[in-house]
Length: 72
Image (cartoon, rainbow, N blue to C red; front, side):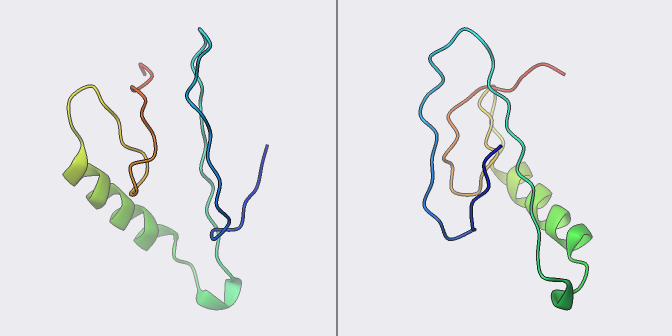
């Protein structure tokens, strides 16, 4: 597990193994800002729905993931 501040530059190279790479992107905010979970996911889902295309998956609003979806 690796944790980064939201303003810390970070990246992961291409997956060159034969195994799928999975990722989880937890988000958080200060308690004083209130519960933003529902608003965050509604906004995120709307953005990702607008950019969904074919077999390619976009999990980031800055399009930094070049993978294909893992079958459900």
